[in-house]
Image 1 (cartoon, helix red, strand yellow):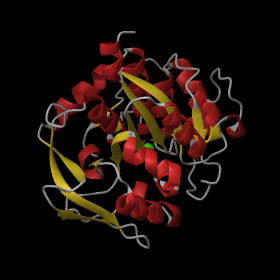
Image 2: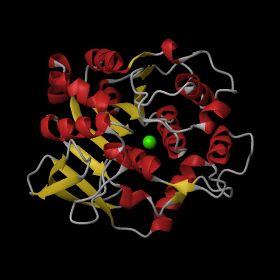
Image 3: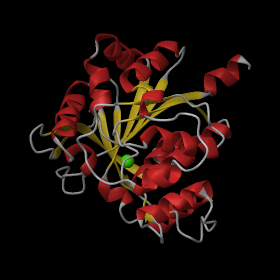
Image 4: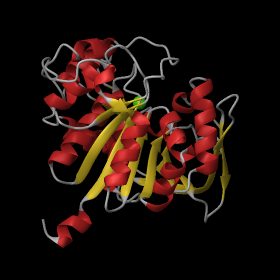
Length: 299
Ligand SMILES: [Ca+2]
């Protein structure tokens, strides 16, 4: 690889709850396909919710996406979020090599290892609960990595449509996610770009027209979730936004300032300031425009 190529290969780590909602599956497909296309170096995935088949189902899906050796981490303590994930059971029936959650690395340890190994800037993508990132931020070496090596944290989190005040699952799900989001927004030393609930809710992806094959693992996951006709696109839109890298070209404007979360209630808030380190994106295109771009990646 030449120096020029090296300079332009982006490195990313994806955090996901991989919990009950199938939109994470669409997001992981795009992340894997972008990696296989050489658009970025996907260094690993950290799961921040822990269900019986979390690691085996993720490993099976990555295997189906020809990314079977992708390092996986998990927060084994993240069992409080509850819920029922039938899509994981279905995906875990597909071929995989990591059998059980203990076959993955500890999530925080994986972030620390991958960031320590990185010789250039790394971008973090988060489409789940923020407690592992908050632990990274609270860790002395992790904080230094966030300050010195992480160029951007792209997060699907919050609901910003009412002057920045709202409630959304990734932040407000439970006591752990609420406290973690509050801590992360207050202390994270790298810029944060947020894509809120209001952006993805009305954009539908994974429709039967796009993914018709019932043996396609993405289709299997969507059917198991009950999303026969597709699903809101919160998580795949976050991955596409990060992949495009240019907020305007990705079809958004940005409102800059300071995001915060109430550690007790999980309510998100936003203080507007043009030079603030945080921003939330606002759509500048009609919903079918985003749906068409997503369909190209998911089909
Ligand atoms: Ca998610």
